[in-house]
Length: 207
Image (cartoon, rainbow, N blue to C red; front, side, top):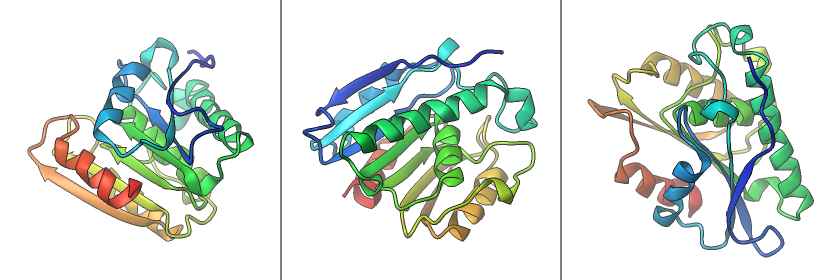
């Protein structure tokens, strides 16, 4: 098992010059550069872009559907990386309602898990193929009020890593915390990000 060291790839504007900030979280086996490459397709001209790098290129060792304790201490360490980054952004002068989270696959799961455990009025959350983490979801883990934060979740059906049933279960919990959730399911889509999903991100979350 492993914990994460702070390793943040920064792009876009400096925090003291930006109007908003986005935390972009890569998937298993990938890296910060790979998720950062999406910026050219997104409306982020006024944003600070921050992409943390996971130790061992993985935020936690096993599937997000195993009992959560099997993914410890890596999972808690990953959540702490995101929390530290949020606090750094806020201290840099950008409020929570101008902070966005975006992740793919394992990164999407981590983005949803962090935001829903700490629900607040954020700028928005984008989860490209992900759901809340654990063998069974404990609603007691999730608290706060999203106050109509836009949340976009996209997924393929079937997806080899993320069952649609878990995505829908996650949507229900997130909506109960008053997020404005858009779920898009693409039948037969591969485990990837399509141009339409990036377009929806601009229209529904970043606009």
